[in-house]
Length: 327
Image (tube, rainbow, N blue to C red; front, side, top):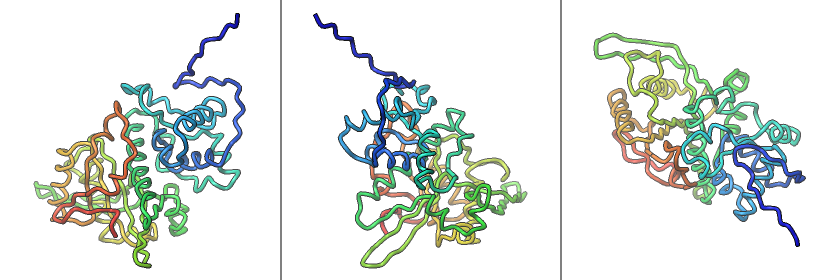
């Protein structure tokens, strides 16, 4: 009689090396490059980028995690409700980063999502939201025939040398000022770091144009208004971006020709409060664009990769809706 050992599924939360030798393939390197650019990606988004048969893809991600130790599944994800039944979230390990560096594929040693900021659950959820937004836009662009996604690495590579040499090249110095209802004016020399930065190259009728975007991801954790300009708030962000526009600081700091601000919130009421403040400060602005996506704030349900972030309308204050996929 033959005795068949029962199959034991490996834990999603901890590595279990079965001794399988992992021989790296070109698609594995593409996965590592994606994770270097985004820091965190859900398996569904990774598959949307690299393609292939879904079952084979899932098996391969398991090998890269369990056997090779090339990727991590950040432990923060397991502490959210229903996480065991959602697509796993991945990030590179030092092994994958060393491989990219050896092959000249690592890119600038700067990421939007510094490792030191990843401790708190709120920070992890916020960082994941940023990645979901950017990845959705890039995936949407890949489906078009006349658009090209320009990531932060390319922007940094083209930035002035003085910016590239800064400790944090994405921190933009600004001078802000606001007169409050009590008649007092508060001013501050400060800096703003966008949650993300990207560009789109538009090719239409043989003509190439560019638009550049800062992204602000809001999980309804930041106050809209504070009675000073020193503490974090959307008031401070609006004033900072207004100074960037007025001084055309995007040109001197990044060497880009324009800048729009895309704010994604998870709550329509909160979004409307921010828009109301934009209206009070600017009277109406083409620079600030808004949309809500509640699924990005729900850690109990994973958003699906969708081009809607690219193709859908973005509302503005005092101006018609804006479509970022249109020139």
